[in-house]
Image (cartoon, rainbow, N blue to C red):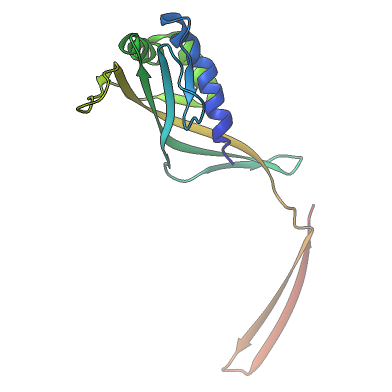
Length: 181
């Protein structure tokens, strides 16, 4: 089973240094967040979709009775940034995800493979509100998840069969027990 919280925490740990590099007082917050909004620039990260793609791939059962199951998903994260450095924060997040080899390798270690080139966009401000610079990007990843699953072992199976030949009125019954090697 996918641990979404662990995935979000790991992604946050990889990308928060990019945010801090733009503004040392900024942080990357995983949404939903019920804490107080920071006073400086900040960014938020929110999982917006997770969809399984195709069937799971099941490997051979090993000598311990475990089987490796690999499933693949399309997963989207939305990054929003707020404050005076928001455009720089999201632009650098964009470039870090798409072009930074160290970030790329860290994402691959998590099973995340970025497959779109997100566009940094300004978020419109509503009338009669205090203006604050806001920007967003949505990043689509292909996510490969592997899990080791313990399978049950069938110790033995008994097969019973009946053959009926209506023309000659013959009935044959058979039974065979197969024991696990």
